[in-house]
Image (cartoon, rainbow over all chains, first blue to last red; front, side, top):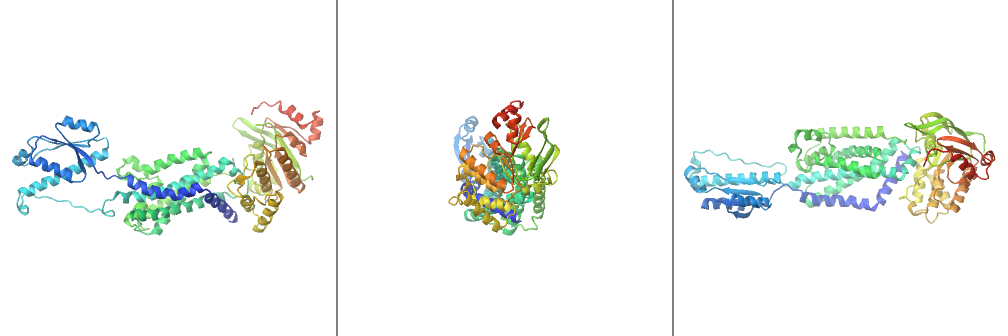
Length: 372
Length: 247
């Protein structure tokens, strides 16, 4: 126990003497929490569109007005022909072509139905899908309005209409930032826990001081604990800074209990530090450790549902996320911050992350040897 | 020097695949002795030393260090030895005093002992003004003297030195050997590798390793007589010239 205290004192002295790392610990959460939620947004605004109007009627003009008035669309140009509009798409100036056929108004009045043609620029599938979805809802409103105009007494209307209203739980304004912020908190904890712990041990290997510790009577568990505890504290410190910033910047704080958040992050960090330790056992140089860490971090984060929801992934990728510890932290953070989930709601997450902690640390202790 | 044996090996061998780094070395070292462990680069000195200090498992053979078995009792061995590696291995981002406290603590010295020993050591090395400066700021020669002092801080039975004076100026080397003599005088056995043949002359006995095998072992004077040489340098060249392994 006394040996451990001496070792811990050494680690903390070294960490706090490293001004660059100390500054990074503060800068990292601030910058990431300011940049990422604002930059990484899935809301698509300012979709440009080109109109090919062969009808030039009152109704076609009204329809175009609906588009420009929606706030999602920006009129790029009136093209004379579809080919001319396609040219705009090819130049990447327009995202959506709306072609109104000749006789649009006449058909609408005489036959009670008419056709409109959309063509979306699917270079970005996301934008294209949303553009068509927004356009569809504009057309639906448009035709409902016409119907309302024509049938003076809607209550006696022969055509039953079903109106869909929805309310969004837990994130009423569908604010994408609220979705991203808890994920970024998870990212921060992961970065500090994994990267810093693995690099720290490999650094001792590289400069040769680990040999001096290996020939001393330090016990294996003392050495491992002396490496885990400081980064466990740092991870939780970064999380706390993150909580403060997300409150100041976005007014977000866990609707659920802070303690459940810290408990979860605490166990998660133990798991991740174990993984960092495992990495450092196999890496001989900081370069190798950095590369291994980068390899796993990228996969963990992209498959963790930070940016793209796991539900949207193909089945095989969804199965992969089950063995990704980052997934559970991101989910737990979102449930806690947005939904206010309790310990009991998160019991499976707790169970799984505890299992990760045992497996990673077990493997690390098993593989760490004081011999060369 | 007494007749008490503190290091005893019997056909100690280390193989890496087909390569036999250390080939059946057998020798004894006595208490309080300064034992020079010589050999060209790649002869297997460091590998042999790593087995003796318990951080490398031998492939075969046996050895006892301070009366403990190197297979089963490595943790007891680690308590009884000090070690100074080829690479400088104090923490450069800790101060001199912090380094002393850390290693004192690791070897289980009490706070009072640590306090007393740090002051003694700092005074002896004339580092009073630098005690709270980072080790990184010291010149190499001072670092080596400090590393040696810390390696014997816990009064080990044996101290292993792996090329302790590499890159150090002649004056500091001389001072370093004075410290080694003093340690030996206090009953600490010194087991050192070196490439400087003048240092070999300071040893009570030396062994010369060629291609993983100990080809000669005796006092410098006897070796010079045996090989009809004027200096240890000549003895070493005669023996090492036969080496087949390169650098």
